[in-house]
Amino acid sequence: MMSAQMKQMLHLQWKASRWPMLPFALLCVGLPLMAVSTTMQAIAEPHHDPSYAASGVLDMMSGWAGMFALLSSLLGAAVALTSWTLDHRANHVYSLALPISRARYSLFKFAGGAFVVIGGGILLLIGCLIAVSVYDIPEPLSTYPFSLSLRFFIGALLVFSMVFAAAAGTIRTTIYIVVGAIIVVIFGPVLADIINTVFDTDFGTPGQLILRALTDWPGPFHVFGGSWMLIDV
Amino acid sequence: MSNAIEARGLNYRAGKTFEIRDMNLNVPAGSIYGYLGPNGSGKTTTIRLLLGMTKRISGDVTLLDHRSPDDLPAALAKIGYVPERPHLYPTLTVAEAMRFHAAFYPTWDAQWATRLLRVFELPHDRRIARLSKGETGKLMILLALAQRPELLILDEPTDGLDPMVRRDVLAAVIDYVGDTGATVFISSHLVHELERMCDWVGVLDKGRLVTEMPITQFKAGVKRIRLIGAPEQALGTPFELLSRVPEALSDGESWVVRGWDDPMREYFEARGAKIRDIVDLDLEEVFVEMLRNSRQGVTR
Image (cartoon, rainbow over all chains, first blue to last red; front, side, top):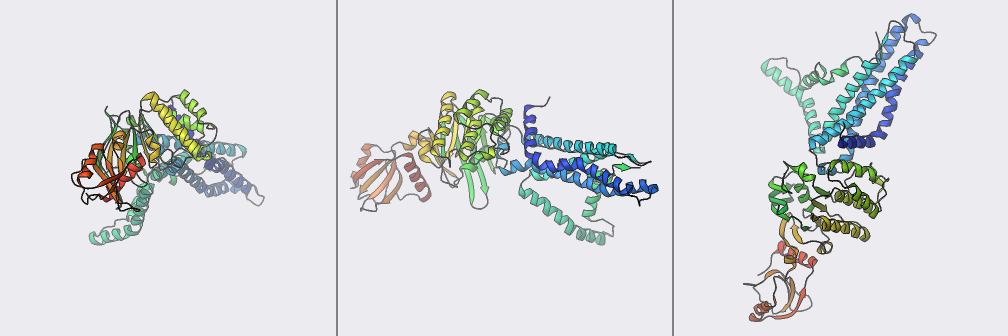
């Protein structure tokens, strides 16, 4: 049973994000339709060799894969930003005066945002199901509407979580994060070079190590490294 | 519970220019405590420190017997807070804001909220972003009162409001206190406004609590005494000398004293000074003299 507080927080999230989310909603439904329709139109052109239909579809769909990943990231970031915008505008005064702990309030906020992200995932699934049902997919290719939508949802949720955490803080905190990142990028290679020279090692730069930790399994960004193809073998 | 709010040794610093140093604040339960101070004296900062919205360097705060910040949510459930600036979510309508607020306060009185909505003539279906300043002020008071708080903390609640709205807002607060006996902590630089409703007063200046006492005591025996031939040194006075300034149009002096009683005329007579006039002061004048005394000191 959802508490009255949670219901109100969901309502608040809905009111805060419904207009900014409108273009994302349209893109979530429209992107799979665009991807499949343009692909099918391309391979149906007379000069196109039918024997290469399957490989043509794979080529074109792999081109669209990055768009799905990008939309997923943008959706997550946009939802996270709309989650905190209203609080930032009033310096968090209203939320801090509410008789609940800050952790609980943040949890409510997170849950509200996650519901919107789920909505994005569902819309994408609808778009995918429509797209693959409208067009005849060449043999021996298969469609993956559910796994793509799940990957899309996880990717969006991941970016949402990160931006949500960063946006929850003050401008000073954000500056610390950015300055920290700059230090890692600029001074990291120099530091690694010194360590490698002094200790005769092959130590990667901190930037590379962090990137590897994030993208290699079980790093959180591993989800962006997999297949984002709606139609695949 | 003798004090609704207690602060002990409160310390806070913002940059190099402003600090609250070793503040001890006592707001008696059931009182209407006027927290007076000029703009920038630290009234809002004190309130934010009390409510745990700003981190203090040191000190203890107790709100309605709940220690802050450990037991802050329990205290906040019994506190109605109206900040100096609008803080509500602008995308919500008035009715939605009421429903949102109600969900967090178990003591929310829906019937009374509806009554206040009618009294304040607030449009329930209008978005907060589209309310006028007066309507927003009334809505903030409505939300704070309808949660039936034991303690109301009002930070300049009528600042910038027109006289009609100001009267409505203060009347609602006074009615509520009359019905429930709740404690009110109200900050303002509009001294005359608080004079009619407060029974305790605290004066803040540059982050320092200059004084706090019952308003009757604050105003008791505070007089402006116009003198001719005032003594150069004000030593061994039977009253508290708040300030002394030369008069512009005569060769006399004007003294502001506290704790005056008529037999104290003898003090001046014994020193060859002549009293030309004794004038009662209102709260605003007492407040101004108190600040002058605090900032400059007096030549005694």
